[in-house]
Image (cartoon, rainbow, N blue to C red):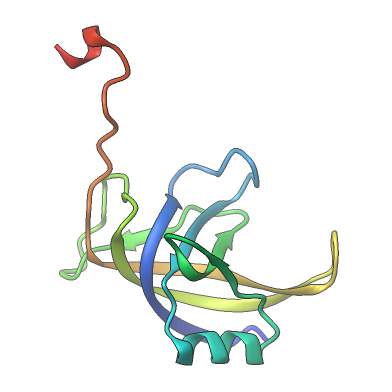
Length: 129
């Protein structure tokens, strides 16, 4: 446990600088994992999920600190990262016991290799003007 490893994946639901309202943690879903990564994670005891649109995925979390993200040049990513972006996450496994026993994945650092900036659509006609 606690050995660092990298995961290359599609990024979804990135809460890098603001905690997720449901978990209270900084987190990002690492999606469309390849079979080698799935085997590696399952070998550590990590539960890999599967969902349409995400393929096989895990949620990597940081309980206390925002997730530092940089682009390929090393410049800090200062925009919200949209679903469909791609990146390489520097992760670490950790055991947990509540509400059940298992192995989670913490994230220390994220290199965004293919950035799609999140630009929410206006919700009213006035905002669109």
